[in-house]
Image 1 (cartoon, rainbow, N blue to C red):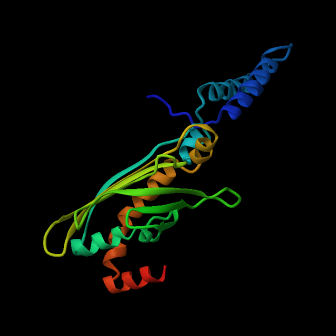
Image 2 (image 1 turned 90 degrees about the vertical axis):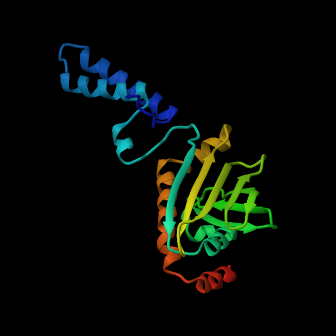
Image 3 (image 1 turned 45 degrees about the horizontal axis):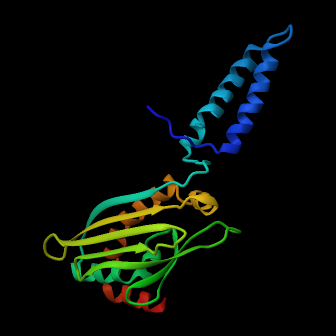
Length: 223
């Protein structure tokens, strides 16, 4: 099984240099130190492979390369298709169900400005997107503009599944560009974010079924 690298280039270099020195010290001289040699060898292997099992366990990724995020999921909600579509069509609603989004500002019928939540002290990550397809009660698709710092795209499809039941097919992806901006974005786009978005979509069922449309429209009007 191929192990996915989760250690940055700088950390790998430091690990290789320090473990090589410790390995040399443990094996040179009159008094050998097998325990130190073994631990140094493991550190050397960690640096050479660029993989840390502890990082993997806690889903920590320190690599410098951008990480693509893709969520593809389907749920069925006990809510009329027209009203489910109406909720998603108002893109400013999305931050209320997607925890990684700070806001979505609608510019006009086709264009919007997106911002994801970033740690304190980190420059806000903002980009513009355009709706590519909008079929009433059936499908909404959007994608970021060509010059955006983040490549984002999403598609939501709606299908009747019986009286007042709607099947929602959801696909959303993020892809960070190369370069310094891409390296910064990579720290935000990671497997943990992917799981969060997937769970947020699953939780939409509870959200929409526990609020009547008047309440939802009232909350949206306040934004």
